[in-house]
Amino acid sequence: MIEIEAIRHRVETNTILHELSLNLGEGRIGIIGANGSGKSTFARLLNGLILPSAGRVRVHGHDTRAAGDVVRALVGFVFQNPDHQIVYPIVEEDVGFGLRNAGLRGDALSCAVTEALESFGLTEKRNQPAHLLSGGEKQLLALAGILALAPRVVVLDEPTALLDLRNRRKIARILADLPQQVVLVTHDLDMLDGFDRVLVFDSGRIVADDTPARAIAHYIRLMEA
Ligand SMILES: Nc1ncnc2c1ncn2[C@@H]1O[C@H](COP(=O)(O)OP(=O)(O)OP(=O)(O)O)[C@@H](O)[C@H]1O
Image (cartoon, rainbow, N blue to C red; front, side, top):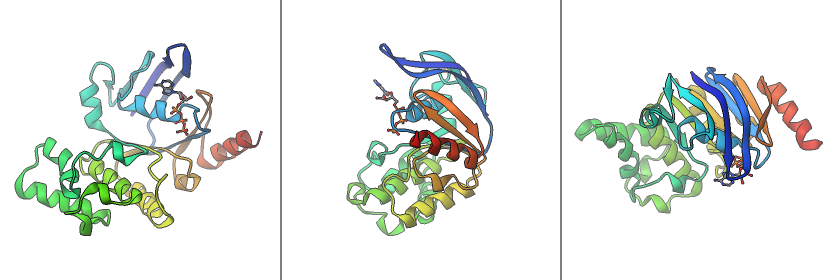
């Protein structure tokens, strides 16, 4: 459960998010809205990457301000641009990075890396330089690295922006099968099939909070206005 209590977010004199309170408890939550409406800012508040100017966010009871390190272990965050996430030069080292931080060594580490690479179709790239992967492959690598850590919640900020149709479908299948709570920011409305709840952002406010079909209809009306 993610509890959002009376948060507001401002940068200098700019109000990026107006006051909002809500609980996120469903397994699959989508976030849509126009460019610049506050979706990424909201997503980053969920794992303490940014702290709200007012109010608080709690994940499984842990406040992002008071217990940022606990929250970051609970909430895996997948960035829109995988270059912001890939830290090691070789593919297998990059997937292994978080696993080593989580204490895995030796065979356990090697098996976990093998499994993560296999499930994302990256086995053949194991020993290649990560910077030579295509944009879509980098996105899969970033996601593999986060999911290998088995966080309780996965927040993804436009993870399919660089992907072709096959890889978009692959990510959709991977997300559908995850045991974790998923919060997905996306402009790719097809990704919201089967989701429990979709929030629509507009100018820093949530203007719809509904089933995917009704939320998408609201968003389309907004875009056509
Ligand atoms: N650190 C910052 N300093 C100044 N302005 C910011 C900062 N972060 C975000 N903004 C502004 O806040 C608004 C919301 O940004 P945000 O990235 O949350 O939007 P978004 O809905 O994710 O957009 P997109 O769909 O284009 O990714 C934008 O106008 C952006 O320029």
